[in-house]
Structures are given as structure tokens and as C-alpha cells.
Image 1 (cartoon, rainbow, N blue to C red):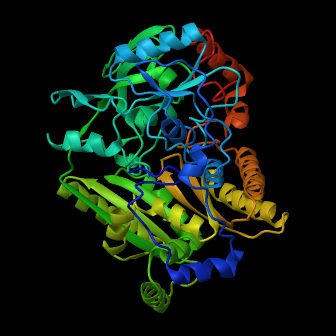
Image 2 (cartoon, rainbow, N blue to C red; image 1 turned 45 degrees about the horizontal axis):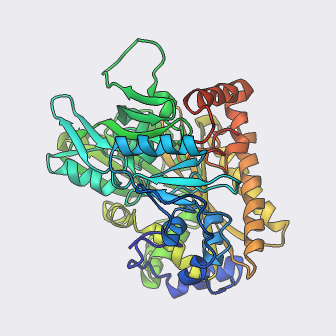
Image 3 (cartoon, rainbow, N blue to C red; image 1 turned 90 degrees about the horizontal axis):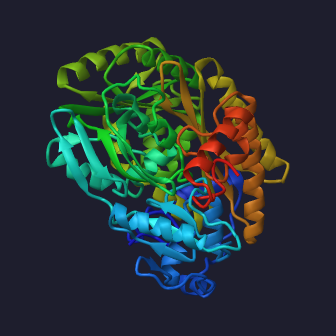
Length: 530
């Protein structure tokens, strides 16, 4: 069963090794281990619903609690402390486009706010109901999860938008196909959510981002239904799909999606390589990205991340032997780690591997074979469970990301990390900050930053510390010329920074689109624009 106050299945545990706790204590200090609020205690805080009974809407307290928050750190602080700002008044689980239309029409008659809900994995508060005087209803799309059509001639598949990642792959694999979209939230996030937030999968270098895969679909909006037809290409005016990619529920609800699929790859391997310094790895990755190859993933971890992730997920002996072996080869404290995936036919994979390894050697890199790559592949959807273990050990973890042209990548990463450390130091706190290049493009790269700080006993102090660090990091991203979000979307957390990227005229345009599709402003207000 999905955890109500943390990440993932409550039967899955990812224990923090004892020596990992010692490592964190030595860097940032001892964290507080205040007991979390229980489910029973939090359920008592759920207020009476403000809506009348309806056959398509449940007002059960636990359903409302489970749809009150996502997976941002502020959500965790709220859930774990039992201080949840607000709850939806009801939750709807429609089973068809017609039932979604019925709920939208009902909300417009009754003046209810509607919040679309996919897998609840948002880390920037897309799905949180705001405190307001009118009722809020969350529309959970989990019942809309079927493959509706498979066009093997055109390599197109039509799914209902509430389908989760594993079910997408399970239904396609029966016919020998894959979508190839694997965000870290893959096990719980949904196809509709990926589209609504412009998601990027871990192997997007080969399969494409969600905007490359989304070819058409069906939208239910307050203004009426909209059919987005799938063409291989069109010059018939602006591409309306772009209105709904990243729309975050403001314009309507994506109920069906037509996506481009791929035959299941004949051959795929993941490899690990070390570089003596981050700069060497950065130069290698940039050169690799600007050569045509069958790479599906390039992920370059800085020295701090390479060390920390090995400590948090491994055991003491594995770490010691790995550290000893690398040092004996001349790879000391400043070493960085590259994990790369190569996907396609066997011949093309072999050709790409030869080219990539040649570039890696050019910059002094050492290929370790598939051992590290296999370990990463095995645990790539398991590592988010470390958030649960870290929290219970007295530490809070959060992430943020951006993307920039190659000429700005290095300076931006240094600025973001330095700014975050300074923000914590100003509050007499130490934080552990590390990063990697998570997605690579010919013109630039995405920087993904993780930071860990010790918990305080008072939840408000945790929230205050997070706010100061997040504010500093966001400003550093803007000052460096980066996008405020590469793959997490905008939600409520990033909305204040959107003008820097879109300009006032761009914001006005988006707001006018919202007014057209949603004249009363009842669709997920508070995200993207006021």
C-alpha cells in the first residue's frame, strides 16, 4: 500500500547503513528524531466536508488526507508533523470521460475548485488545495489506466491518462514495445502527469522527453472537450499540443494520450566510468553529446555525489574496497563518476560503445565495465526510499534542478552550490550538497542538485531552513541564466520565478489562455499564474 506520509510502498524499506549515519553526523551534525504524527492523529484533524453527498465524489477523511499533499519537502514536514494546511472537500474517481465532464459541470454550477491528480508525486506542490472559502474537489484519474489502441503500423499507442509507469510498460511489453519514459517517480507517476508537467525520463537521450513522445489526445475542459489529432507533422498553425504540455491542470484535464512507442530494444547496457576530476568528465560528456550515437543516458556525478551515494546505499566493506582500488589507480578525492546507457541494436550499441569509450579515455577516464551500471539500473527506482530512512534518522533531503547551455553549466553549478551552503551557514547550519548532470543535450545539460540537512525538533524551523536554502538556490539559478525547472514543473513553489523565463507578456498570454478554457478560474488555481 502506498505510504500516506512518505515515499512509495509502505512494505518496502531501504535501511540507512550505520556507517552512513556516522558519515552524515561528521559532516552536518546530529539530526533530531522527533516522533511523527500517526495516521489516526492526523485523521482527527480533517475537517467536515463542505460539499453535499454525490455518487461520483467521496468525502471520506482518509481519501481526502491522501490527496492533500504531494512529495515536496514542505509536504513531508506537514504530513510528518500532522500540520496539514488544508484538505480537499472531496475526491472523485471517474471511470470515463463522461464522468469527468459531469464532475466539471457540477463544479461549475456549484463554484468548486477542481484539482487533477495523477500519482501524487509532485515535488513542487502541483496538487495541494489552497486555503479558500469555496470547496475543493480532487479528481483522481487512477481508474483511467487502460491501453485503448495500438497502431503497430504507425508506432502509436493510445492510453487513458491515469495509467502509471509500470502499467504503461506492462501493457506495451505484451506486444514487444516500450514507451521508454523512466522518470525516477516511474513506479507511481502517470502518463497524464508526465504531460502536464513536461516530464523527462532517465533515458530521454534515446527515447525523447515527454514532449517528443506526446502526439495527441483528448482534453476535458470547462469550455468543452478538445481533440488533439496525431499527425506525423503539420504546418496548420500553432501546435495545440504545446498548450497542454506543462499546463499543470490549469486549462483542463488530459484524459487520453496518443504517444509514440518503440520496439523493445534488442540490446541495452549501462556502464560506469571514473574521471580524475569533474572538469575532465564535463569535457568528455559534452563531446559525447555532440556526436551522434545510440546513447540513452549520460549521468555525471560530482565528487561529493559519487562518494555520498556509495556510502548511503552500500556497505562499509564495499566502500572501502572500491575506494582502495580507485586510489591505487590514481583516482583520488576529486574523482567524478559517469554512468551511461547505450540502447539499440547490438551492432549499433557496439559501435557507440567504441566511440564513447575512446572519448572517455581521451579525458583520462577509466571504464569499470557494467558492474556499476547494473547496480544503478537495479536500484534506480529504489533509491527514493532513502528519503524515508534519512528522515527517520534525523535528516531531511530535497532536490532541485535546472538546465543551461554548455558555456554556463560549470559556473552555474558552482554558484548554486556555494549559494546554498552560504544560506545555511548564515543560519548557523551545515548542509551536504552535491549534484550531477542528469540529462544531456547537444546544446547544454541539466544540473540536478541534492541537499541534506539535519532536522530540528520544531517543524517550523525545518520549514524556515528549507525556505531560505530553496530561495537562495532559486535566485542563483535565475542569476545564472538557467530555467527554474528542467523536469519538475512549476507548481506553487516555482511560480514566483516564472516571469524571469516567460516575461510579463508571456505570463499574460498564459493567463488569457486560462481565462478562455476556464472562465471562472476553478481549475487548479495557484499554479503557473495567479
